[in-house]
Image (spheres, rainbow, N blue to C red):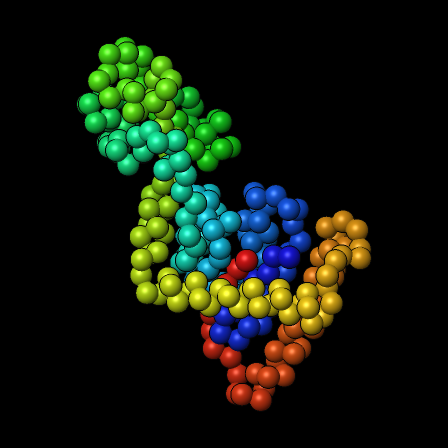
Length: 235
C-alpha cells in the first residue's frame, strides 16, 4: 500500500495500490499528490519518502510543483566494480561533455530526446583512439572505451542531495516513520494480512477502508487534544 500522510496529524490523505515494481511506486505518489491538489486544492510544502522514490524524474516532478523534496537520492555512480567512479571525471556544462583525468573528452552519444528521455539518462563515451594508449585504462574500464551515464535531471538530484546533510532533512526522515507505524497498525491491529479482492481496483477499495478506519481513530484523538500540526509525507 502506498499512502500519503500528514506528518503533523498522522491523518491519511490518500492511498494508492500499485504493482510490486520499483518504477510504479513514484507513479503512485504522483497520483496521490495530484488527487489531493485537484480535490482539496492542497499542495504539500515538503514531501518526504524513502529511497525508492529518489529517482531523478520523480524528484524533478516534485520540485517543479514547488514542493521541497526530502528524499534520499538514488545514486549508482559508485557501482563501478572497483574501477574509476564518475566523480573522477569532470563535467563541462558549457560544452556538455566529460573530461577524464588524462584530459581526454567523453562526448554525448545518441539523441537526448529519444532513448535518453525514456530512460531518464544520457550517455557520454570516449574515443577509441584516446583510450587505446591511455596509461590509466586498466583502472578505468575493461571495455575498449569508457562510457558514463548522466541523469537528465542531474541539477535537481544535486540540489536534493545537498539537503541530506541538513538537520531539517533528518527531522523529515524521523517523521517518515509514521508511515511504518501506520502499516504495522493496519496489518496487526486491523487484520489486513492479505488482500481479499482481486486486482488493483480491489486492492484500492481495501486500502481506502483501512485508511478510513485509521483516520477515524486518529481524528478521535485529535479532537481530544485540540487539533493537528501541519506536515506531509509520502510512502
